[in-house]
Structure formats: structure tokens, C-alpha cells
Image (cartoon, rainbow over all chains, first blue to last red):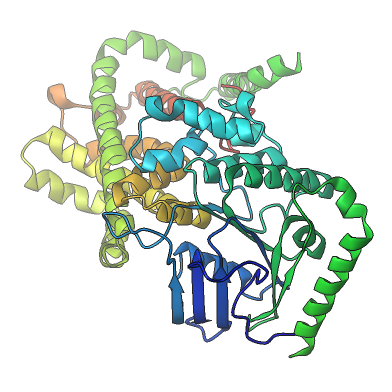
Length: 272
Length: 260
């Protein structure tokens, strides 16, 4: 087990400048809780599917929020070396964020919800109508543009949330246990659809989860975090080519990965 | 059939109560200057309509002005208070002071200070009616979903964008609930202020008609005026309930699946 992890997905060449580089990051909340301790994380410029795996309360969400710029780290640095700063000195690339719950505006139609990020950027409905409809089509909700969130099932609401995150064509998609509240069958389907979308878009996904099975099915690199204070205690690679079939979920190899990840997790629990 | 009964039930209850009243007054031979029967009140309402109707219009005008003033002013004050914690802490206690001061105690002062009677009555009624709108608007604006707020922040939404597209729509159900309370209070405020003002002539509202009729022991007319006030209150409440359901029917739990 590697205590300080300089990079995740180390099977890839390191020579090129990384997409994101987090060094020595700490986060202590104002109430004194140490959420994150000495986080080092480096993701290559190539599209990746990273899973951040850890027990509840280990600071995964906090780490994701810091990456999104929604929270400030107490110490350490986060950099986006390959991102060209725009005229406004915007310090990060285009991001999409999917929360644990669908986080839709209940008063607005599905179309208006997905349109929101573009609306904030000042683009008119007329200009981007086609674009919004494409994002909806990608998650299979083309026919539901005029529906209201409460008319949809939990899985469909989550799809709207994913479409909204994709509508700005982000280069990084941050997902905070997005399907955790859904039933198993819906979750498997959404996991599969997410992989398809990811492959088509060639973007980097950082996917927070507490499910070993989900992380092994979805991710290539898996960063395993310890219980509070959160540290990255292991990084593993699932060397299984995409697209991953359902057969992979039944395979011996899959079980082997799950066992390894599980062992890394329980190592982290023993540290305390 | 069940639906029909549901619609008819308030009227049935009313009819039963009125019948009991009518029969009881008849049987006990209660004099009309103590408690008139419903039929006598109805006849007075028709006979005196020429006097009562202009007064109804006066009271209605004050009520509507006070209500609209509360709807607009309450919203503006609410947005102001919710925009800064400091403003809220500094100003909110004084809004509470205005709310808890009995209007009958300050109405005479306002009537002395303000020359124009309509304006004076409007101020009194507004003071009674505006607070629920402010309190509800502030609560609504402050109870926006935190993740949605994060989302707006993530996409770099400006303060006006966040207010217009997130906070105000989130606050709408609270605001409408405030309006429904405020509508009734505007009417109460208008009537109380007219009582205090007690002026006759062309400016006299229903409250003055009640005072005048009571002095002259024309009790049926007192009741007729009361009926008009009650009907006005019910009409305001129904109108605002309709507006609420119309605006919220697509999305808010309180209005979804309910008939208009």
C-alpha cells in the first residue's frame, strides 16, 4: 500500500502536463473537523474515468466540492496546468456537476432545467434549442422536454441532471454519488448509459461513490480513501477495456478487482 | 355524486345554520333590535343597498389599495431584508414592532398626521397587512435548495440571475401564502381604521355605516353591512386561492392534483 500517492492511473505516461494536479491539500472545517489530510492527486490530460471510493463521511464530497471550486482548501494547491485561462482569468476548465439528488428546479420544465447553464451564460433559447434537445436525446429524454420534474421517475430526474451537466460540453464531469439513492436495477442501467456517454464525449469523469461494485464496473483508476480524516490510501487500476459489457460484471476478473478494492478499503479502516 | 356533495357541503352547512337561526328567533320572539332573523337581514340588505353599496366601494378601495401595497411593498422589503444578513438583523425587529402595535392605538395619530383621509386609512390598513408578506418572502428567499444554489455558483450566475431564476421562484409558494393572509388583514385593517376615523359623508365606508346604524338601533342594517364585509373577505380569499393554484399547479405539492 502506498501511503502518499503521487499519481492515479500511473499506467499512463507522466511526461505530459496533467489535467489536474492537487498537492498537499488539507481541509479543516470551522468546527475543527479535519475532513481531508494531505491529498495528492494527479490526473493525466487524456480522458479518464476516476472513481473516488471511500466510506461515508471520509471527505469524498468535500474533495469534489473543492475541485469544483465550491469550497476552498485550508492548505495545499489545486491546479489545472493544461487549461488555458480565458480573458476573464477563469481558473478552471468547463465543469459539469451532478449532485447526489437530481437538484432540479421543480417550477421549470425539463427543457428549462437543462437550458439553465446556457441561460446563465447569456445564450438565448432560440440559439441553443437544438443543442439542449441533443443533450436530452443523449440521456433518452427527448420526448420529455416539456414535462415537469415531478412527473418523472427518480431515474429520469437523474438523467435530466446528467443532461444538464453535459449541456455545456464540459471537459470534466464531477459526480457526487449520483445514483446512490436509486434502486439497483435503475442504477445498473444508468451506470451503463453513463459509460456510453463518457466514451462518446471523451471527457474526464470524477465519480464519487461508496460502492465497490460500481467503482470497479465504471472506473479505470480508483482512488481509495480512508475514513476521516480523509486521505488517499491506495490507487488501483481496473485494466479492462471499454466498452465494458454486462458479462464483465459476472466475470472472475471483476470479482478479483472487487476483492482487491475491498482489501484496500479495510486496510484504511484498520489504520484508525 | 361525491364531488357534488363536496362542492355543496359548505352551502348545506350554511343553510342549516340559517334555518336554525330563523326558526329560533321566531320561536323565542327575539326583538329585531337585539337579533334580527336572516330573512329580515336579507330584506334590509336589498332595501338599503343604495346606502350600503357606495360604502362597500369605499371600503373595497381602501382594502385593495392596502393589499396591493402589501403585495408590492412586502415583496420589496422582503427582497431587501433577504439580500443581507445585516439588513435583516437591523430592520426585522422594527417590522415586528409595527406588526405588534395595535392599529387602534396608532390609527388616531395617523389620522391626525395625514390630511387626506383615504391616504390615512390606506396607511393604517397597510400597517396591518404588510407583515405576513415580508415574513413569508424572507423565509421563502432563505429556504432555497442549497445544491441549486451551488449549481448557480458553479456556473458563475450573477446576483440578479440567482434572484430572478432561483430565489424568487423558490419563494413563490411562501409569498402566495403570505398574500392570502394579507388579503384578509387588509380588509380588517381598512374596517378598523374606518371605525377609528368615524367620518361620515361621501367618504364613509362600511364600518361607519355599522357605527351609525348601531347608534340609531338599526340593528338589521348592522348585520347587512357585516354580511357585505364577510362576503368581501370570502371573495378575496377565493380569488387568492385560485391565483395560488393557478401559479403552483405544475410543481408545488400544495397545489398539484387539486382542482381549481
